[in-house]
Length: 350
Image (tube, rainbow, N blue to C red; front, side, top):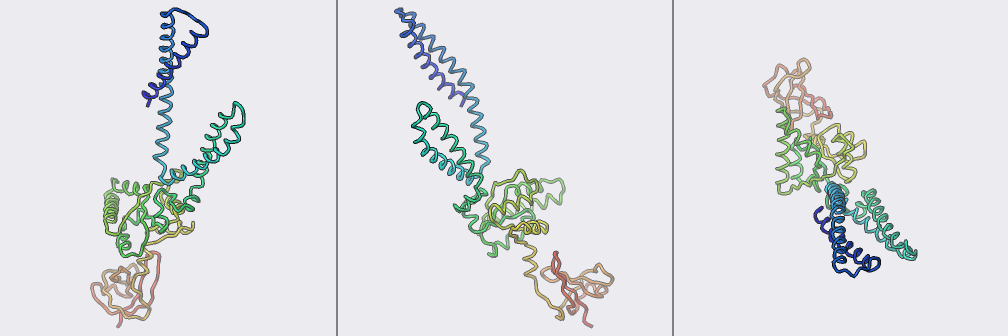
C-alpha cells in the first residue's frame, strides 16, 4: 500500500513540478535559452517527484494504519452488523444528497459544504443504525447476534457448557422435542476448550467429553450447530453473557445449571432445564401403591436402605438396612420432589 501510494504521488508531484516550472518560464522568467529552460523544467520534475516520494511515504503509512484499523473492526463485526451499518450509511448519504441541492446555491463554499455534509451524514447514519441494530434486526427479520435470520425466527436454543458436557441434548434434539437452530456461542466453546486443556484430569476428561458430544451433535442427521461470534467484553461471567445473548437473539437457554436457570428466569429469559425435563418424564408413583424394590445400600438415617428405579429415581426404604441385597415388596408412603430430583419413600410389606 505504501509503495502504491508513493508511485501515485511521485507521478502527481512530477506533473505538478513540470506545470509549475513551465508556467514560471512563460510568465516570469521568459528565457529563450533551450538549455536553461530544459534545466528548469527538469529541476521542477525532480523536485516535484522527490516531494511526492516523501509525502507518499507519510500518507501511505497513515493510510495503511487506517486500513488495518478498519479491517480489524470489520473482522470483529458480525455480518448482520455490517449489513445494518451499510443500510444506515446509505440512508445518511441519501439525506445528504437531498441537502446538497440547497448547498449548491452557496457560492465558493458550496462544494466543500457538500463534501462535509456527505461525510457527516454518512457517519451519523451508520452510527445510528448500529446503535439501534436490535430494533432494526427485529424489523428486518434478521439476527442481531451475527447469524442469518433463519435462526431467531425459529426461537434459537442457546446451549451452555453444562448442557454440552451432560450429553443428553443429543437424544432430546433427535426426538424432536427441541425445534429450531442450536446456537453455540464462541465464548462457551472457548470455555469448553479451556476445560479440555486443564491440568486436572477430571476437568480435562469432562472437557474432552463435551467436545466429543459437540462433534456427534454436528454429525447427527438432524443436528446442526450454528456458532455465533457475538461476545460481550464488558461482561466477565459466561453465564451473564449467555443471558444477554438470549435477550439479544430472543432465544431460549438450554442448561442443566440450577443457578443459571434461576438467574435467567429472573431476567425474563426462557430456559429449558434438562433436569426438569428428565424429572417430568420419570414414572409417577402415588402413596399406597405397591412396588418391588431391590435394596442396594444403606441410607443416611439410621436403619434406612436405598434402592433405585430404572430412571434413577431414589427410593428410601424404611427399616431396609437389614434387607440390603434383597428384592422386597414395598408400599409407597410418600413422594418428595426436590430440585435435585424425585424421592420415593416406601416401607416393606410384612
